[in-house]
Length: 283
Image (cartoon, rainbow, N blue to C red; front, side, top):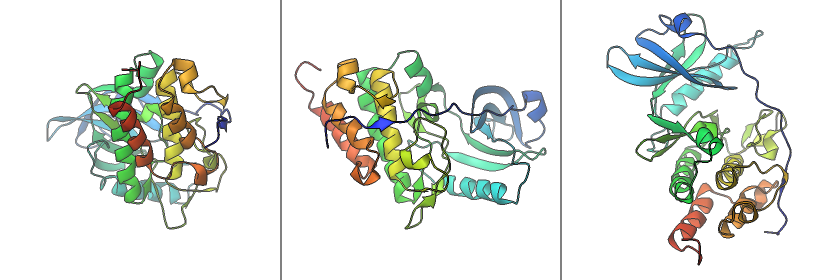
C-alpha cells in the first residue's frame, strides 16, 4: 500500500419519495397494524408495526413505487430480493419475515424490529467511542463475509443501514441485494458517498469488493466523524487514533478493487489485532 490517501469524489444527495401516512397504510397490509414511521431515506420508509396474530413488533419497510413506465422488472427484482434475503440467517443481519405489495401497489418487507439506535445518529451526535469501533466492526465484517459466501453483495453499506440494539449488538439491514454470478452483476448509478468508485457509473459490473470499500468509509466516519471526501487526512491525524487504522482504511478505499482488501475478514482480522494488541498509550 502506498502512503497517499485515495481520493473519493463528492456525490449528490439522495432523492426521497413522499411516504404514505400511517392512516393511508393501515388496512393495506393484512395482518399488521402500523403505529409510527421512524426513518426515511432514498430506499424507502420504515414503520413500526404490530403483527396482530402473533402479537409481536415488527419493522415494515415501504419501498418507493415502481417507475411510471414499468415492464415488470422492478416488481420481479423486488420479489427475488425478498426471497433471497429471507434465506440469510446470521445474528448480525436483520431477519426478513415476509414481503408483498400493499393494496395500493407499493412493495414492502416485514422485518425484525430492533429496539435501539441507528449508527448514523450516533455518529452525528458524536457518540462513537473506540470501544464501539472495536466491538462493532468485526461482527459487521462477519455478516458481510457470510452474505458474500452466499453470493450476495449488500450494495448499500452505510451508517443509516447499520442498527444497534440496546444490548450492544450490531445489525446490518437494508440490502439492495445484488446476487453475484461468477462475473459479477451490472451496477447502478450510486448516489451515496459510501459507494465504491465502480458503482458510480450505470452498468458497471460490481462484486463483493464494493462492500469492502463502503465499510472502509464507515470505519473512517466512525473514527473521525467525517467522510473521506477528496484528499482526506488519515484518521490518526484527524482523531489521534492508532495509526494501524490508517492502513486498514487505505486498503479498503483503494479505487482499484484489485488493490483493496479482498475479503471482509481482512478488515476484521486487522481490527481485532488493534483490539487485542493496543499500541502503547492507546489503551
